[in-house]
Amino acid sequence: MQEKRHNESQEDYLEGIYVVRQRKGYCRSVDLAEELGYSKASVSVAVSKMKAENLIQVAHAGLLELTEEGKRIAEYTFQKHSLLKKMLCEIGVDELQADTEACQIEHIISDETFQRLMAMEEGCGQCKKCRI
Image (cartoon, rainbow, N blue to C red; front, side):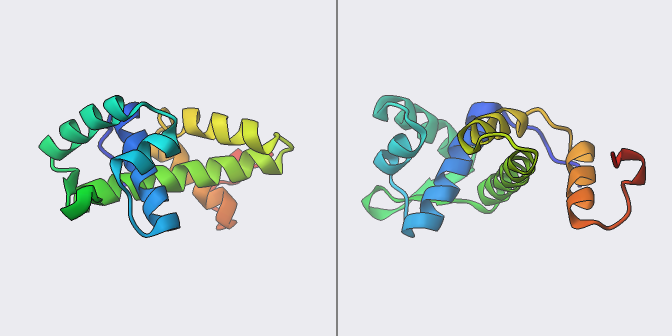
């Protein structure tokens, strides 16, 4: 799957909305600011931009809703983050450090490399050249 690249900040915001909604069942700007450790003003600017790009909608009571495209990006970013963090933890990296580094890597890893890591993790035999 060739994934269109979005900027790192946008991916973080969309993933943040996704994670908060998974945990709480809803996400408001204040929840997103708290989740990401950003100011409410920064979140407000990002929300406006994402809304203009049709990645989110702001529903009643200020609830942030992912559009189909926003959800696709958020889920893919979350999937990368989760697998990368898991793999880093498996090789002995501290969980907090693994989380931080997975967040950095998720934005720069190519789709091809990520697909190979997923195949390796699933043990499907497609990555024999990459096995150590």
